[in-house]
Image (cartoon, rainbow, N blue to C red):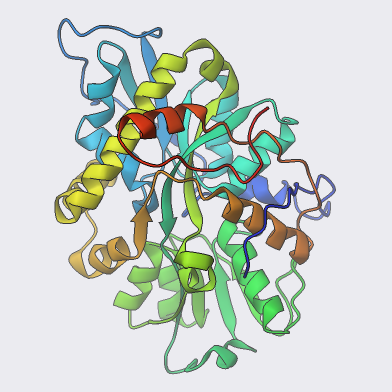
Length: 372
């Protein structure tokens, strides 16, 4: 699965049988709907702290481990620390389209989000709505199967395998893997040599327990939930990528907010970089902080047999791994879900590289897809 720097684009003419554009349906790592929940208990600015050019910055993310940079940065007050007198407010989303809609409407200014909805939001607005300004996480996606029914990769043929949504990031990856095996599947219906069953991550474990699916190509923590139910990891998607890295979560910003409040954007990016540094230096503490935030948001923490293996499979990185986003989009082209678009300008890594330089870290690249 070689990386490519070839620019690709979203198909505007996706079959009308799908009620919504495929990538508009795509959540990031796990999407369970479209409701946004405002977080009201965010840390307040320190008394007397200097305010930046905006009174408030509204930050969106998913209550999901692949968004742990945002979970931990929120929980530990690390973004607020960098923002000084500018208040950080937070909203949680359960689907990529609702977060893009919130960004477009001004309900949020900056968000953590996966590659498919970022591509969709950018192309649907003809390059006017957002920029990807940084990376956050890589990996955390696995093919987990029923070991009684599937013992080898070749045994996947003829079985029922779940993906989160039609056209989402994991769905596209699985369709591409199927094609590379030489098998045939109709991308729209999911029918063919493998039955691709589009199932919300929140119900995939129950579908597995009931026997209605034989496995799933899913992100964390859903993959580890399946393992806790007796499933076996047959393939880690990171093994298919150069250097075992591929983008699962990016940071996006409204182009309007970036233009009007570059100092605020820089502060949030500094908070993200320093949060990732802390996560990587203190993995156990960071895992506990992320789980504490998940419990606060959902009322239930993840058990150790789920969060421990899930956490180990995710890499937290400031690099947006731009060439892999381009490759992911190309896989969707091959699957018949996308056609060649123009992603030129989707990235603006200028501020991130400024922050990285100040932190003594190397610059990151945009794979030729940066804003001119």
